Length: 140
Image (cartoon, rainbow, N blue to C red; front, side):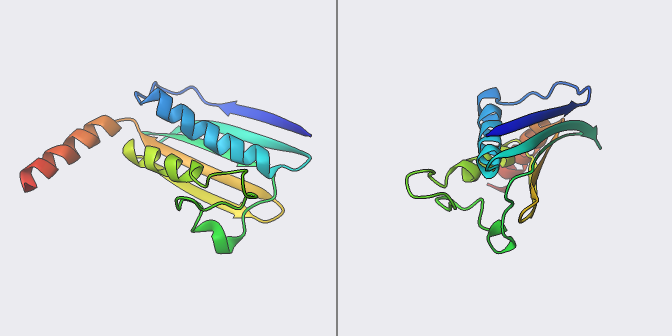
């Protein structure tokens, strides 16, 4: 098996984040991408700045995900892997971490062609969090 990682990085400002959590997000997505490629394929990692958001794309040339199950991939314990091969928690945890950084995750997939996950994080996610916390306090 040969998997080529193609890195296409723009020059980005630093994003203050919980590095350990972000590492887990990237590893979960990359692990799934690698498992989706059966023999030889590519995983593209792209970064860019768009509308004051850091955008990170992970695109693979793997098997793809059937449209019928795309809306279930973030559900806890949902997995397409054989018993004992996956917990079904990777993308559920990934989704929760991204949301905790006021980020978004979008998936596009075509069976036989591959899958692309697009993550976006506002540069000011911490100020957004403080504003949300302040609004919560006012409600109480």
